[in-house]
Length: 77
Length: 420
Image (cartoon, each protein chain N blue to C red):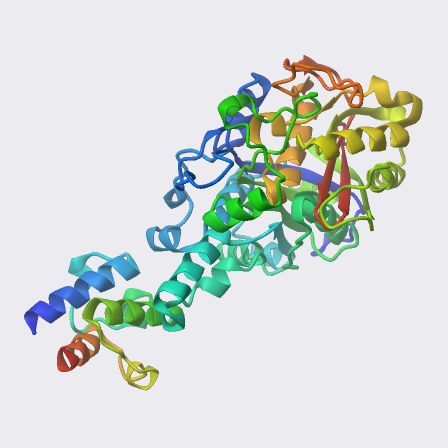
């Protein structure tokens, strides 16, 4: 779980040009990390590649925070 | 006066910005251009081993983070970053009041691009074929479309006036400034940020222009490969960059105490209706474009002090443009200095006419005409006074620039030094 979070955080840092210190589980993509809907689409694509999984759009709709995403990814790998 | 003011019908230039193969500010670029330097060399930003053309006029040491935040700088296509940079420079140069909300409603953007985000297109097409449609970036469309240079700069500065885009291949820069001039002249905006931007040095861009046999393959010549009007010219050298001007209604600029570089006094357009890529061998489209510009400026050929030619260094363009200038200028043709600054920076495609407009304005300001460098062997079919190799001092009142694009689009602008 911790390993998944570290890898998710690394992808988020690369995609959104933020530092590791800015990325914690409670951070919301839109409000806290200044990511618009297109940024989120691209981020999800990068996570799919990193973990070799498929993340359907319907599932993405429920992901508001970093914790939502890392929890989802952890349940899939 | 009330706001927006009644249009004066006159349009002046109050600020300029440029990102070019010879420098990333207007003043560095101009100093090196006048010194006769070249910005052309071996391509660095992509692997060109499989391409017949291996040289270009690249922008060097461009730092998008000087103008955009880190994330944006990394994401946007290079043609958008160039436009944002040149715009920021031009607005600063104009001391434009970017905090005036009323003014921002009457300020527009018209920064054209001949092609748009070719690097984005190249990269994402590769992803499509290698990894499938689900791997294509959601930013492909917004950062590829040519109009995003205008859209993006308007978002940065909050300019809510007319926002549009011209796409007329290599005539884009001239048409963008000309159309922005018309927008202000008829009172649809008080000020416009206008110009052109291009970043075509990408696998698909280089391959396409190589296939069209439009570019020189004389790679050994390097910095001397772009040789407009020379008998041994054999194709253009691709360049990249952006040129942007702040245009304002004359009375408005005067009232706010703006520094005024010059006035836009003439704009002409025409179509060749001849061939998709080849210019009209009679130079008739070029002739009519220049005549219309002089008519709109209310001046005669005897008053033109300098022409910045389209002068691409292709066998056809330079020959047919020479014919067009002779037909438009009559007896005066041999008396007017004509240079091609593409000899120094290559062909910036959709940005060319905008950067060349900046050059015309600086020629008026400093009474200095930039040379056509790399000129060695005269061509009897290109026998105008092309300011060979060395810049020239000349007190001039009017400067003209020509741009012609694939599709037979022709555009000519005329700038006037004394504004009163």
